Length: 368
Image 1: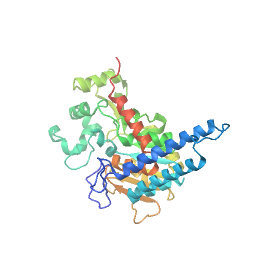
Image 2 (image 1 turned 30 degrees about the vertical axis):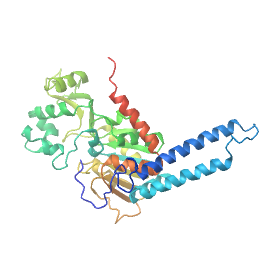
Image 3 (image 1 turned 90 degrees about the vertical axis):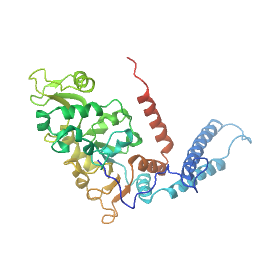
Image 4 (image 1 turned 120 degrees about the horizontal axis):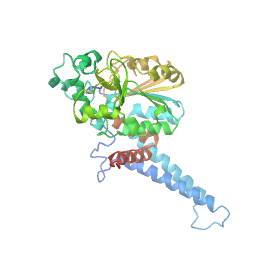
């Protein structure tokens, strides 16, 4: 749901190479990160060896405490070198996390998180979903997700859903980062506006997630609410491009995603206020903040709560100039921003490994 960024605060991706940084295709920042990971790994191995050899006589083959300390210092220097390369807003966020200023992060994610997976956002001019619905002859773009319109003319949504149905898309680096936040005990909860289910594929536990606008995993009748067989609904829409019908009243059935004119899931209302009370930071990722009530979340958090916006453009009431003590904005694609942040925190090797495993798992055909 993001638009093309025109803000001067946008900086190049850490993967972008410059002439001064190139060394056989690797940037100075990447070298610093690799050195940090290698030094830390070596340090840990040496510490383990020293513990095993505590009762043994010292030999020239046994590294000394001085060697271990020197390696640790080298690791810190490598990290400092990387952080000098990073954009200032992301250095600041990394400091908040590293210093313990931020311990519980409430994440609000939008369509921009899934763009790198090949799923279009809604409002980017030219490439957004709403700009590419002309063939459906809609009275207005949002009608495709209007429950009253679906009751009368269901086929535009059926055609669109057949193309967007989960199963052919892979989680992005940002999805894996959310799982890493959870594993590190930093994620209060993720409130996603997306209906693609990629958080589940990235191994984020269900209890750590609120799918504000529903999902495709279940379906029901829009008239009587009778649950429908999910496999039958998927077959009707994806394989046959037909409108699924209710077995009870023969009215139209749709996946349990929230259309305009429908209420949000009970889980959203049950968890939001407690989560807002607990959170000391609100991380806003890839959203135009255009759809209420989810768009109000950044305005509902306490004045002490940090607000971090990683998006192609500045949106909502996040204002780093007016609220310098709490608001941070970095312009750009989500994955690029997350890569910067992970490297600033020293998490990049772990995140990269996690994400590669997710990609391998999704790409591996399931046994029938």
